[in-house]
Amino acid sequence: MAVVDAIQIDETGFRGHVVRPGDPDYDVQRKIWNGSFDRYPAVIVRCAGVSDVIAAVKLGRASDLPVAVRSGGHSFPGLSVADDALMIDLSPMKGVRVDPEKRTARVQAGVLLGELDRETQAFGLAVPSGIVTHTGVAGLTLGGGIGWIMRKHGLSIDQLVSVDLVTADGEFVKASADENADLFWGVRGGGGNFGIVTEFEFRCVPLGTQVLAGPVFWPMQQSKEVLRFYRDWVAEAPDELMTIVIHRKAPPLPFVPEELHGKPVVMVICCWVGDVEEGEKFIRPLKEFGSPVADLCLPKPFLTHQAMFDPSFVPGRWYYFKSCDVAELSDEIIDITVERSLQISSPLTSFPIWQMGGAVGRVGEDETAFNGRTARFTYNIGACTEAGEGFDEEREWVRSFWSALEPWHEGVYVNFLGDEGAERVRQAYGPEKYDRLRALKQKYDPDNFFRINQNISPN
Ligand SMILES: Cc1cc2nc3c(=O)[nH]c(=O)nc-3n(C[C@H](O)[C@H](O)[C@H](O)COP(=O)(O)OP(=O)(O)OC[C@H]3O[C@@H](n4cnc5c(N)ncnc54)[C@H](O)[C@@H]3O)c2cc1C
Image 1: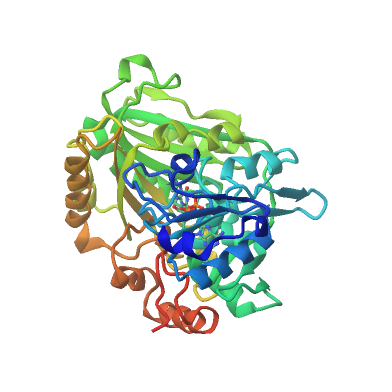
Image 2: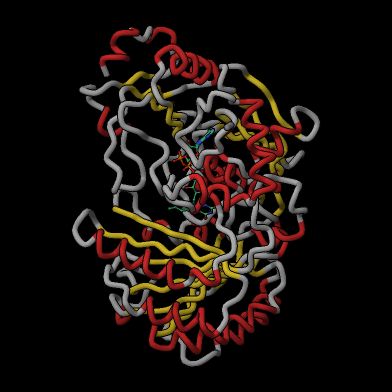
C-alpha cells in the first residue's frame, strides 16, 4: 500500500475509478466469485476503456507491483485478485455491439456471458460460450470456452475473429488471422499471458431462440446403470446434442420436484440445438431408461437454459475444483464415479461430467493454442460450501476422487485448472504447444509482467 501511495496515482489520468483500501467500495470491488479467496490488493483500477487499460499497465510498470487482471472474476483458483497487487479491473467495460447483417458481435472485456447472450438472442443469434451466465466472456474465451452449443458450433475461440489487446509495454495491438497471426493463435487458448484483451470480435451463429433442453433425473443409487446406458447412447449422438451429467443432492429449486429436495440424484442434462422433433426422437430412449424421477427436458428459450446452472454456482460461496479429461466412461471409471458421488456431503456440491467432441474435434489441433480437441469426457470435480465450515472435508473429497481417476487422466482444460503449479500448466498444453507458447511469451511479455494467471514462463 505504501508503494502505491508513494507513487501517487494521478486519478485524473483515468476515466474510470481508482479504489484503495479504506474506500467505501474497496471490499465490494476486491471480491471475486470464489468466496474462499479473501485477498487485499494494494489498489484497484476500474477501467472505463482502452486508455485506462494502457494507463494501468504503465502504472504497473512504474510501481513494480504485481499485476492481477480481472474481467468476470470467475477464475476457479482466484487468479484475478492478489494481495498487495495492482488489480486491473475490466468489469466496467460492458459494450456489446451485434451486427445482425454481418452476424458479428464486438464484445468488451467486462461483459458476462448472460449479457452477451441477451444481445445476440435479440437477433436469434449466439456466440458459443459457457453454462453459467455470470461468468466473464474474457477469461472464458482466452482459455477456449466450452458450453452447450460447442458440439454443433465449436468453442468460443472457434468463432473468434479478432481481439484488441494491450501488451505488457502498454502498446495497443490487434490480432486476427491477418494481423499478428502468431498472437491470435496464442490468445485462442493461451489465457492472459500475452496482454490484456480489451475487446473481442466474434462471428455469431444462427441458433434461433428455442432449444430442447433440461435435465432427466434418477436416484443416485441407480447411477451405475444410468451411466452405462448413457455412455452407449451418447456415443451415437449427433452434433446437435450436448450433454452434461451431474451428481449431487437435489437442490430445493422451483424446477426440481419437492419430493426430491436433498436426495442424492444423478441427472443427464441435454441441450439439443436443431429440429425439435428429431431431438425428441433421439432423446426418447434416455427418458425411457429405467424409471426417471423427473423429466424437465422440454422445448424452452435458449436464454432460460443458459441460466439453468446459475443457482448452483452462486457468487461468494466457497468452491474448490480439480479437473481431468478421460477417454471413455469405462466400467471402472463408472464404478469410481458412483462410489465417490454417494459420499458427497455438502448439499451445495454439484459436479459436472462434460460430453466433449463434435465440432470441437474437427478443428485442427495446431490451429489454436487450446489443447484437448480430442477429449471425450471432462470431469470437473467440484465442491461447494456456504462458507468455511465443512470446506476442508469437501475439498479432501475432491482431491481423493480426482486421485482415484489418476490412472485414466488424459489432458486437462486450462480454464478448469486450479493453482496446481507450472508442470500442470505444461501438461495442460502438452510439450509442443507449451514450447510454442513460451516462444510467444518471450516475444510479447519477456519480463513475465502478466504472471498472475495459468502462467507460461518466458524462461
Ligand atoms: C461458475 C463458473 C462456471 C464456469 N463455466 C464454464 C463453462 O461453461 N465453460 C468454460 O469454458 N469455462 C467455464 N468456467 C471456467 C471459466 O472459463 C474460467 O474461470 C475463466 O477464467 C473465467 O473468466 P472470467 O473473465 O470470469 O475470470 P477472471 O477471474 O476475471 O479471469 C480469469 C483469468 O483470465 C485472465 N483475464 C481475465 N480477463 C482478461 C483480459 N481481458 N485479458 C487478459 N487476461 C484476462 C485473468 O488474469 C485470470 O488469470 C466457469 C467458471 C465458473 C466459476
